[in-house]
Length: 159
Image 1 (spheres, helix red, strand yellow):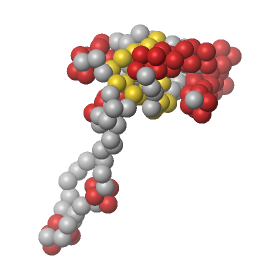
Image 2 (tube, one colour):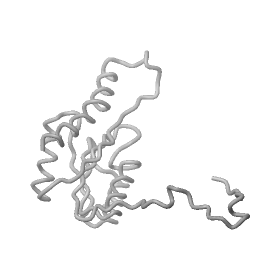
Image 3 (cartoon, rainbow, N blue to C red):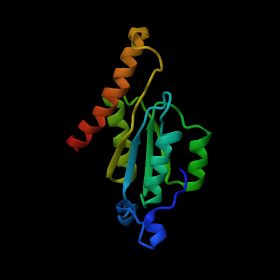
Image 4 (cartoon, one colour):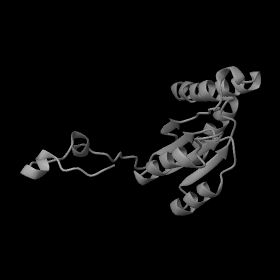
């Protein structure tokens, strides 16, 4: 972002934007949070955006954050676990299957006594022309982008 001098700055008027005037920190003190991310290509609780969301929750006072993911956590997740000393945990589960997601949530509730928030950021992409997708790739994309986002919403409504 470049720096520019506005008329307000030259006249001494306030340059605070409406967004800057609002509270940007969320109070999550004492909350148990599960993030549901598939680590296929771009996003995943083990790294990147998903890990950023998990750490933002902890930074805002969450008691503990669980990553529910297909894959085992990698080095970036392990480094974050060290920073958060027991507050960032992982459960390996197939989030495209309702039963494994229910089992993961049950495990969290049994361990923590409650689950207050579930962040759903599951997603997969395949960078090629749609007509070049195999049947298996189409099913994988549908399962991750549709089913893995619907099951947490259904589950949260049932509890």
